[in-house]
Image (cartoon, rainbow, N blue to C red; front, top):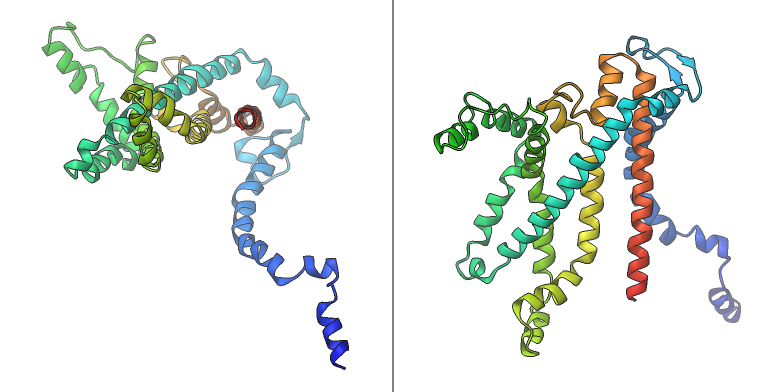
Length: 318
């Protein structure tokens, strides 16, 4: 009897039973509620948007079955010159320029805030709090404040420039084609820069001080320490920041719409504002949905290529 029990205890369990054991199911059970929420609030609307992009449907006909038109909405969108103009605005002045400026300014400010003088005088908490002020400001409030600052008649910026004798009269920054993108980019960078600064700062503070001390003992200058020790260690964080800020900015609607509504004319029209205009101004829900699908495909392709490049470089370093 004892031999039989010992044999039963030591006998290997069935692989299928082992797979469905409690220890294997527990992680999935813990993640299931979050996955269900994502499926309901994200996957569901995304699939509905894809289905809507193949239909001809007015805004006032939502809830009814639209006319199935196949790829006609995509052909209309992709052959429209306005789409190419909006794509260019979305890619270059809105995304590439602002992401590059945020990356450079964010890294510079993080290096400055990580200086020993702030730790010596115990001012780190105060500086971090000041940096976070733009981040905690709602985008609507931030854009409204900047529109007031840039107002041609009463804005502080124009009043300061006139007072210094730089200009003779106020400049309508948001109404002139040679200044409007600079104004919109300033609003976006000011509001979104703290995320980059705080992320870089957290990464800098996680680097062991022994590495810097060892480099100093080997005769490295401060510039060499920053460029050859610190910056290589920041590559993983930089990759994440670039990916997140690019996706968020490419899909952003708030800053351009609240600041210019795509104007003057269609000069600052981006894909997000074009999608909104097609759906809720022109009432062409199918065309708006098609623009949304195109934006998703572009960002999916960007993320895929970006991950391939980043992982290939990482594997090459290894």
